[in-house]
Image (cartoon, rainbow, N blue to C red; front, side, top):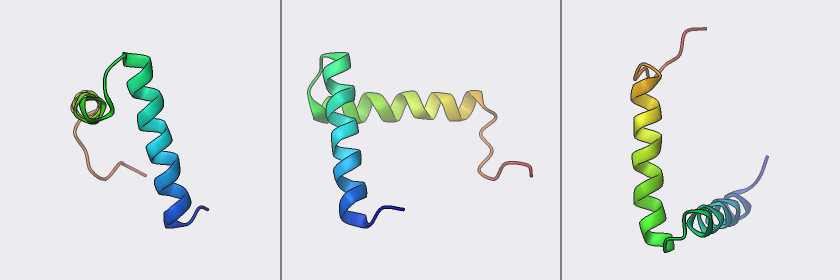
Length: 52
């Protein structure tokens, strides 16, 4: 497990890598990434709690 500081560093690095991959700035990457994840969520059935 990582602590809150380590996790935030990992998330920041992931956003930077995603932005570089998409060739957009980091702020735009956050919006684009959230839209993509929202589409994945809806495509997967929009269930908050999965069936066990």
